[in-house]
Length: 223
Image (cartoon, rainbow, N blue to C red; front, side, top):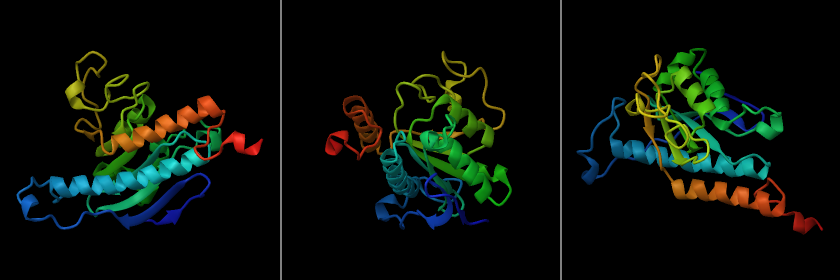
């Protein structure tokens, strides 16, 4: 697979580093084993580590004046991170430049020209994906999604609409049938929700009260 780096300003990178969990202790030895050969406990630990990195990316985005959302893509077969991204709508003047959208593009490139291999990846993102990003996740065949805080205004995992889970098929606000390409998408929300939610709240509080998008810059310091 390819390894490369994109512009730091745009905050997208294609990379490989392991977020695999340590060997489980005796209490976890009987934990259920996933299709990838890891236990649920190992997967949860791996996802938490990836969420910490996604939160770092989100904070960096906030410092650039972007809505602070970060995302990491993990290869489920190797446990390695293959791509990471954050929001860049302001920097690129592109309303579709959400962290998830940019991560999918970087991840597809990282999979060596076989974008359908995204099926064996997990997307870890700090906020419940919106409908646009949920549609892209389903279309691109990403295998699993792990997110932090709920996106109460625009979220597509039940907050505004229900697009991601097959359990929502036929419900009010849910799809009429399972997605043709990704009918069995695995979704887990609430990972580090307190931390990721607090970052969003602080960002918008500063924007309302201080007139700045940045989580670091205070206009009162410049007067």
